[in-house]
Length: 376
Image (cartoon, rainbow, N blue to C red; front, side, top):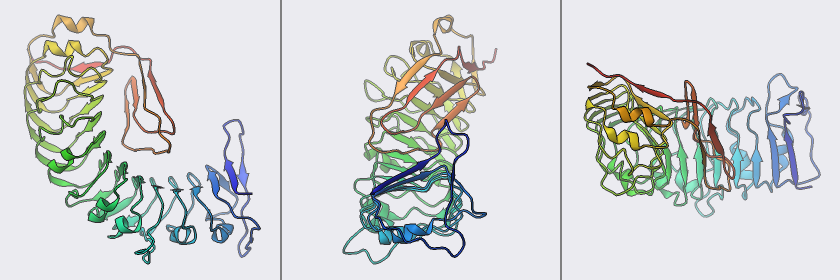
């Protein structure tokens, strides 16, 4: 036997896994490569890792998510299983600091998928995390209590595709050495100017909402070639919305709400933004009239222009804009990665923008959702 899967089935109302009792150590006669124990209910008063895991040395995939496990981060799993590729213990109650093996200079770990989101870990990240795990493609540490700075060694992860450190207490500067295509740093304490170095990356998603960034939005942000999602909500940004310097934007979501932006709404929100689904500009100091170009956004599901200083009348063409039903499919992916903060739930509309294994269909079946205010 090299594979074992224990997971709660939606059709089964009660499912329990009976673990070893106190002081009982079961020595298994097998070595697993794949172990999936997710969303289970332990019979123990305090859910901990099963002892038999300490005898496993060939694991390649281990999913322990959603089990309410109350333990420190099990560094020994990485030490014992040199070929572990995916470690997925998100949505538990892991506590303490994030400690990693140190004697790996000659043989760095081969892990490529690490998801520790929504636990209770704290402290600073290991300074040498990039040297210890240089093969990581997906790193999700969101929803914990980590603080300090992001180690510059993260730049050693040359294959990193997605980095999610949202909903922590990170501060200082965003490392200039980052190399990835998906960045989610929302809900931290980063400050200063928005880092222009990020414009050099081939980014798909850039989420920096709910921080303390200040200054203007670099023009290069809206001109990143393949960017589909830019979230800068709830910072201290000033100045105008940058202009588009290319013939076509692939943005599906632009969220600039609750800043101090001023000036007019730019005219590139038209046929040059054919993929735009959510345009969120509320809570700023934008002025001028509502531009007719917005009527050319044929696929917009959510338009928020409220809490600004817009004047004049609502253009008649807005009566012909069809806000509502759409279906969006994300390209296939070989690995599961849930990026928190990508869930955007609005009244009357549910935009769920996150990665799932293979693909995820998003359907909204609501009617018109338009929010704006004008001053006579």
